[in-house]
Length: 178
Image (cartoon, rainbow, N blue to C red; front, side, top):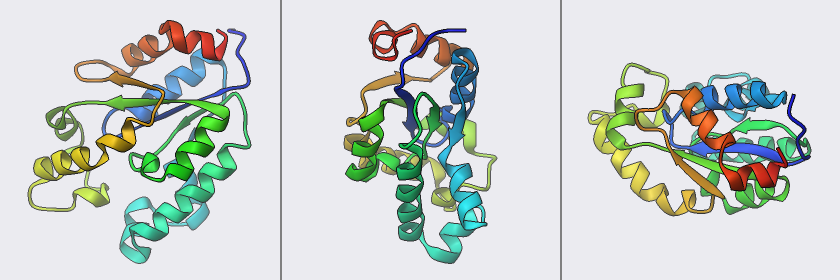
């Protein structure tokens, strides 16, 4: 078991970049609890993310997401996977940075499309041309992702390889004291 600080490790990035799988692996490697904010939102509201978007809209989802982020930041020394739009709200970024390190996972639009094209539960991709939509959303979110402390590209990497890259980063090791 690795000895770690009280700082949490937060993964964010666009859908399909491997946040959840990578987060679970890192949590296991560090012997920490893992939380996925999308799962917590679904439990809190009682609907799937897709149903929340359909029934209540994106604004309601984002407000609930901020509530969940606020609850998560009360925890220390955990691994959290956040939804792809979490960093769009500067309040979320400030709350997450107050007790953690934010790692953005990124991938090319083509890689993301290849990973998620068969998943019909992605509310932002219920459209005719998903690849173009991915490119457009990535472009509009690029400044929000710059607010993260670190960025790792997950193109052509497994979740285990990404987890190892993150935990082998000298600066992250210093911040987490591992």
